[in-house]
Image (cartoon, rainbow, N blue to C red; front, side):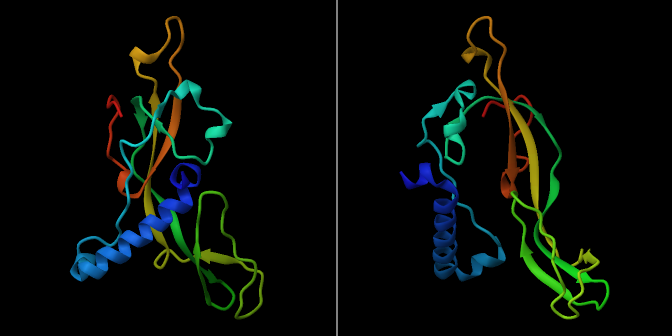
Length: 167
C-alpha cells in the first residue's frame, strides 16, 4: 500500500536500505557501481493510457504501450554549486529537483545579492531522456484515436528503449 500511495518516499527508503546493505556486505562493489536502484516489476495492475486521471498523480501505476518518439540522452542538473562573482566564494551544494529551480539569495561570505555564476566543474549532472508512448493498436477501441503520454526517463533508465518497442 505504501509503495503505491507514496512511491517517491517509499522508493527512497528502499534505495537507501539497498545501498547500505549491499556496500556493507560487498564493500568492493562501490568501485563497480556508484549507485544502486530498486526496480519494481510485475506487481502492478496495468492501466490504460486513456484511463489515466488526476487521481493517478503521484501514485505508482503500470501502463503499457508502444514507444513512438525518444530524444537523445541529455544532461540534467543534479547537485549545483555557484560562484559569487564579487568575492569568488563557492555556494552550495544545492540539490536540484524537478519542481523548482535553485537560485542563491545572497553570498554568506560578502553578503552581496549576486551576480552568481554556475560552477561547471563542481556541479553534478544526471542523464535524462524524454520518450512518448502510445496505446498499443490492439487496445484502442474501434473508431478511436490512440492516446499517448510523454515520459521522463532518469539515470540508468535512459536508452533502455527505442521507438517501436512495446513496453
